[in-house]
Length: 438
Image (cartoon, rainbow, N blue to C red):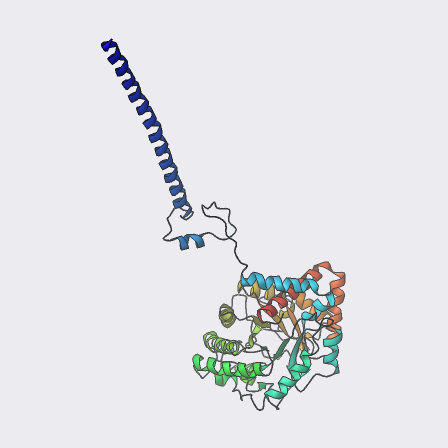
């Protein structure tokens, strides 16, 4: 009996030992599995923290910026909402405003009408109140100082409203280059030297001076200045023959490098002073011998699409200038058919494409300029917008109604042109949003 007892007891012990081994094996297997899952998860996290080429990033911060928002990459971390960028917000505000405007108001945003600096006349007020024109150029000569100009600007601004501009505020521009081209004078305005004299200063000093000149304009309510001139005149000997620029000492020097260094300094100074600079006259007026304001058939037979004289414009655009004025001359080496303001090659392919400019393309005066005399006034603004322009300048307010009607009627009958009006109006509104005018 004792032997049988011990045999039974021994068998039970063996069974218990076997059972214990089985249980421990299962548990250890479960622990190994859990460890493997953790390792796999860690590997996945390490993989998601690597670049697309498998190179590990140095820190979580670099990992979070290595993939652009909107990619379809899998991440181990939860998705996070990204606030809209400033650019997106600006576009949204501009688009929303565009959608609220009538066609007439959209066309009005694409025009800049002249007003005497001494105060608007009946033609200017008619353009602002009846034709929805949203921008003004202060012209002529004024000698009563900053406060007098500020009073005129307030009078112009009083025309803004839901029925006129849809509530969109105005660009108020002038032409304050220095020397013989200085519209605003008197108390609060410095007597600015000519560009040729400005070119004798260091760029740093010139930028400081231009900041002061910009501040003076801003104090008068001006927010755009049609300066600096970035045209390169080939030599001092040729300057007297260069009717629009060299003859009046409007050039900063005689090489593209000199013009760029000083002209860009002036542009940056105006910007720092609170006024948007406008570089002109793209693609350059330094080689012509006649003035497009008072002559027709003005031709530059030298300047080409990749001309070294484009350097000052390229540099200004790289520095962030948002306004470029297009010359009225004819450049057969660039476009053998169209004068510059009507040339898609000059505006869309060169300025927008080659130079990457995304800002405001404004015309030189296309109302009074004799260079434009072969073209009907009604067709001029429409042709400029069709070529890729943004804002047509008319310095003869009595002629503006013809240009306005020409643009309006073409937009009503030509769907393709209507799309160009929308695109140009959106660009104006985007730049106004950047400028705090929406």
